[in-house]
Length: 626
Image (cartoon, rainbow, N blue to C red; front, top):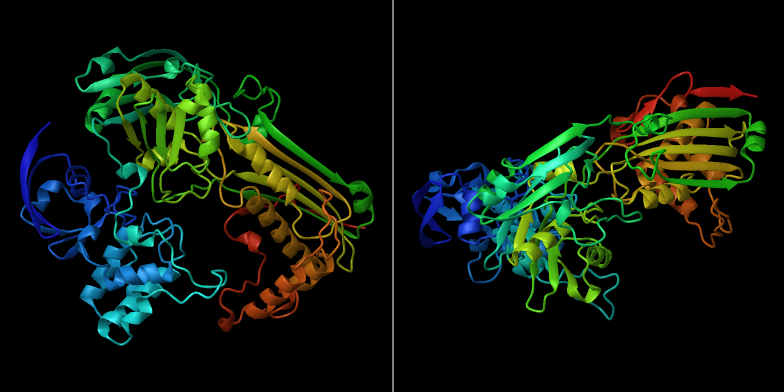
């Protein structure tokens, strides 16, 4: 591997090191100088987590070859305050709660510092523009912008430095603005995430992934990869000593593909080597003999007789069906003056947390297999891994590293088992850090869903019956699908008191990327359909959508379709507050004129026309007037 001599200044110190010609400035700072405050979120210059100063100019270090840093002055987030106190800007981030998961914050602090250095009087619009190259997935940006404005004023002397100090707290912390304990380590770049952690003798893992959505694995030849200098081990499903299977409700997913692959991106083999370059080179030497199989990519098609079978135990490709019944829907529809039926679709959604999946595994001096990762479910993972590696539970340990954004996407044990196997096989620590591409192709997404919604109504706006049928694409493995289907069924009809209900939610196996937990899992898909349908029905009845909801909303003492009695229901107060604060003009949307310019953000059409999709055809969009 070719190298070059680098001489530069980093955070005020002269540095002379040999660097690989392939290295980016980001790699040099993190791997050679251990300045891990500079993060990698995308590797493509889009997210801004890798922002540093090069000769005073803000640069995304993932796009700059290390060789181009020759003779320059580099400043990273660790160097902003040196060994002293936090800068006013970092204190302002601490004050406002601008750091949540914290992964984007070092880069955000660098971009904000650049903004105030270039224009100490920057207004809010300029601040937004200058931070436009940095992405945050947690905060909604408001507290970040507020922090920059406070820091600007403190630096200019128009506000006292005391505004950066903690607010006084009364007898209780509840109801008071309390600063996060971990914020200083986040704004200074000192906090170590899994991908920042190193250990002596650490190996680096890379993963060979399937190019096919559905195929038998006839043979895997790893001999050439194992013979490559620098390779410590190659692992496949054959290395699993125990019960190979993990998941949340059904343990149907092997650590690596066993016998066949079920989606593009599924792990087939993994290499642990002295460095990432060697591990990557070894992947190209592994030979896998595949026999392609018919695949299915649509959940409704997967339910049909003769569809390709994803898992032998589920010949109908059904992960889970949740049926709920209340009253008699046929009687309810017979009592209706109007029946409205629509089909709604929601799409697969990527979590896009800024910290890609990463982990570090080792076997300690007491023979305890230890995995460090941003797992959102470490107790469950520990118990599953103990069975997989055939060790007693007291010989398995999980340590939860700081989570650089999760949103439910890090609940699944996608890669921790591979790390544990490699650490056991080599006796050395092993680290794996996903690229953004790996994260997208191989980890769980929000369940796509197709919902057929049929509602019976009286002329005065009473809902007499609802039939709700939701078919969700669970992808290649079960993961959280059962829980998502339960949540969707429980919340399917929203906060409305409906006497006759028929609910069916189906999670279906396909050869798509697995679907899993994502904020509001199941509820978002169901509520999108319910609230869209409510607006459509209100318009067809000529009723104001707020009035229509008030007619049907649950009240104190209501019994849900899962037979839960509600003692206290705040639906009326929520509707009142929403109507009041939005400036909503009374009347059905069809009865009102064009949207007023001063009501920006208040829609005049059903929300179903935005974002996800409503399918309108003769079968799915049916109205019957009794």
